[in-house]
Amino acid sequence: MNSKDRISLVHGFGGKETYELLDRIIFSKLPLNLKRVEGGVGLEVLDDGAVIKFGDKNVVITLDSYTIKPVIFPGGSIGTLAVSGTVNDLVVMGAQPIAFADSVVVEEGFDVGLLNKVVDDMLKLLMELRIPLIGGDFKVMPKGSLDGMVITSVGIGVARNPIIDINITPGDRIIVTDPIASHGAVILAAQLGMLDKLEGIRSDVKPLIGILPVIDKYSDYIHAARDPTRGGLAAILNEWARQTNVTIVIEREKIPIEDNVRDFLEAMGIDPLTMASEGVAVIAVADTYADDIAKDLRSRGFRASVVGYVEKPRNEFLRGKVVAITEIGGRVVVEARGYNLPRIC
Image (tube, rainbow, N blue to C red; front, side):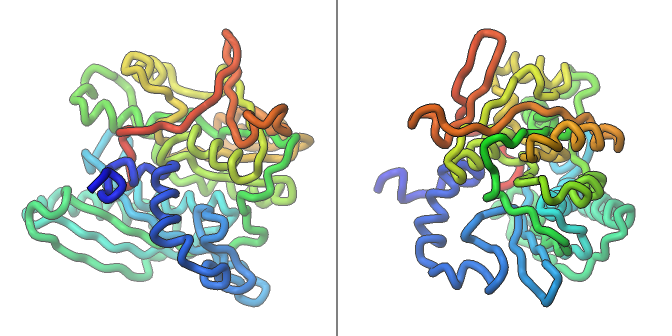
């Protein structure tokens, strides 16, 4: 029996290994008409959610599972993460969230006080956002059969013009709404027992509903949007480049990142582009409106920056690739391989 016959942690990282496994066991077995509801969008594009047409309305549905250690961390908890992550998957598809449902599974012996704190975080955020909790489930697994707890959540939203990540074209520019990699850095520091040595480092986890007015205003000029969770910015940009056979060029010095996050990750030898963010959006927009969109985002409290652009491949090697321009030249940006602290398994 070889390694391909067993599931490894890398299969949960959301990169090439995840796609290759799911394509083998799910995607390749379904005909197109069973990958989506007629008139909508589903598994054929593998965006952050699915779109179902109901008359003149576009209903967007997303589902995700969350597992993390520690379950409470500087800046949030697994409860904050579940709500924010689900809301953000709807937002980057251009959808206004209208409902939330969850399934909580905990290990036998899990601390009730800790569970109560996590649930309180979920409910508090849902109430702040005025999103109804319409249903859910609760299960307990025998001790030793689960790593603490897992939250699975479903988000439902409505979009006027859904953003589907297949419309990227040469000439588009890439916007990042806030500093990247803070969430991944916090979880890494927590797991290494180094939080006390990194004063002020906090997860960026937050809902991105504040970008919806901008998305709605410029919907005709936004060609793709995603939140860079598993695999970070590198994973999203590589996926976009592969899907559309373009080259994406980014300027490293323009990518926002907190100084303490950069310093910590550099000391650990980890590329910030591969680390998860949980309160950041990456948007591909028509060149003419990029500066206006970034300015509008900044006026709403985001620290948005235009960090790159999309171009036709200059040669076959660069087709479907991401290139980072640095002070010493350019390099191909690759997705992380091996263990890199996913927040969703």
